[in-house]
Length: 103
Image 1 (cartoon, rainbow, N blue to C red):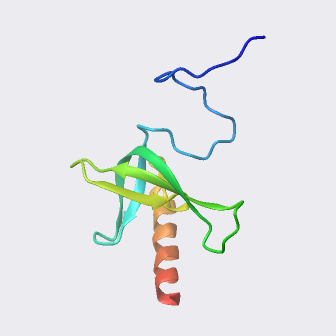
Image 2: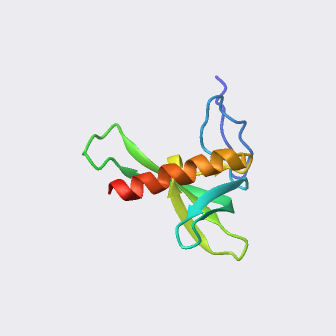
C-alpha cells in the first residue's frame, strides 16, 4: 500500500475552486483610515467559530502585510484581488458607505 504524504515545505498543487488567495499573492484591503483600497501581501490565514454557535460554520480571515511590514487581517469576504477594476472599487466603496450608514 502506498501512502501519499505531504513533506514539510513541499508545495501543494492548488485545489480547484479554492477561494483563498495564495500565500505571497498581492490583494487589496480597504483601510478606513485612508478611505481607500490598499495593496497588501497575503502571509497567512486563521478561522474562528461561527458567532451563532453552528459548529459547521467558521469565519475565515486572511492575514496580510503592507509595504512597510505592518500586519493586518480581514475576513475573506473583505479581501479583493489586485486585478479588480477602478469601477469595481468605486462600487465597493459605495457598498461600504451604505453599510456604515445602515449600522
